Image (cartoon, rainbow, N blue to C red; front, top):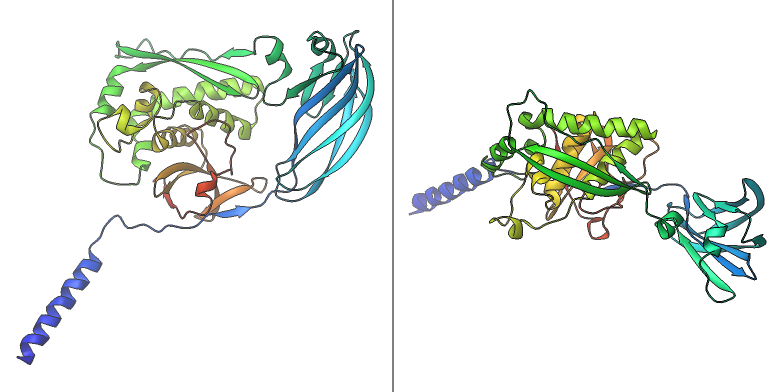
Length: 361
């Protein structure tokens, strides 16, 4: 009887070892780290008080977007000349208001500059209200946007090469905002390429790097990158700003749900699918942006949370924010689902959530 019991126990131990040793999609999740940036300031709005056809007060709303307390020095420039300087202490993550008393005639074509905001006084004076009255100009809506049509720049339409055997195409116009400008891009997407990727079986894995690196769309992705880099060079963008420009293009795509746009609860898309389908959910836009940045020569990874995906981009000493250490480098988080996210910024609900890093092997 004892021998039978020992044999049963031995069998259970062997089975347990077999279960433990069975290979699977096991991954290591790590909590992100943060590199806190120094004090950094932005003037989010200017408030002008006008009375008797003069600007009598200018107030600046200053926000500290850095990680430490600091002092902001404001230099008020009128008609190209510095007329006043003031400083104000601003705690990290907070905002303060400083004010300048002045007497600037609303006529004569005077221009006020502070930080990156430039405001023509005669134009705000043309907006007649009661006396006195206040006009607020924000950094998210430049003054020219209030009174005139915003600047619009069209990227060159991306058309298929005449030598291409693809005759059927799907044409879309994509619109997004970046650096105070509205951008419009017309793309012709080969229907045969879209159909090919649409017909591929979705592998049972959470490692979506295979969608990023599939070689069949390399030529088309390279054409996209070529036009992005051409425009960036024309605009004088450096490498960092070119990356942000490409990110803004992807962030400008509609964020859609797989359960609504497909017959599946989860349907990862190849980059061409996301462009043709005019958007996707988090993993789709992460795959698309990773593909663009990868072909631009940037070192990127996919960052997978239990219910969300983003991109990680290798940062240098001047990069701050949330990052993961991978292969000796710091990969800073980049959100892809909506516009306005900067490198290193992460949604609050994900700030301390462990994630898996998938390299583009």
